[in-house]
Each structure stands twice: as structure tokens, then as C-alpha cells.
Amino acid sequence: MPNELFAELETKLVTLIDEVENLRLEISDLRQTRDTLLAEQQQTEQSLQRLLGKFERLADSADL
Picture 1 (cartoon, helix red, strand yellow):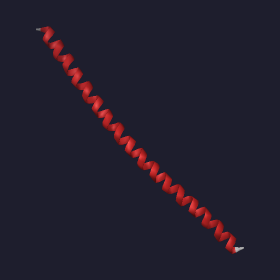
Picture 2 (tube, rainbow, N blue to C red; picture 1 turned 90 degrees about the horizontal axis):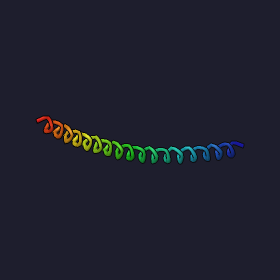
Picture 3 (cartoon, rainbow, N blue to C red; picture 1 turned 90 degrees about the vertical axis):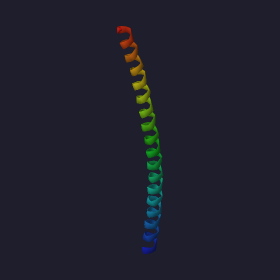
Picture 4 (tube, helix red, strand yellow; picture 1 turned 180 degrees about the vertical axis):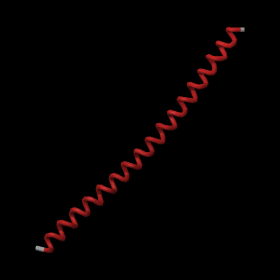
């Protein structure tokens, strides 16, 4: 009986360890995706700021 319990416990522990490893990999992938999205967001904001600057210069030159 104790051997069966130990075998069951070992099986559950191995399953949990595998699940933890998979979750760590998923977290790593999600962090990389987040970093990529943040970089894209920053590039988009910079592009929008440049465009707004051009519109402002255009409006300023129209006032002259």
C-alpha cells in the first residue's frame, strides 16, 4: 500500500513539475510578446508625433 501511494505521489509531482516548466516557458513567451508590442507602440507614437509636428508646421506656414 505505501508503495502505491508513493508511486501516485511521484506521478503527481512529475505532472506538477512539467506543468510549472510549461508555465514558465509560456511566461517567457508572453514577456517577449509584451516587449515587442511595447516597442511597436513606442514606434507608432513617435511616428504620430512626427506627423503632428508636420501638420503644426503646415498650419503655422499657412498663417504667415
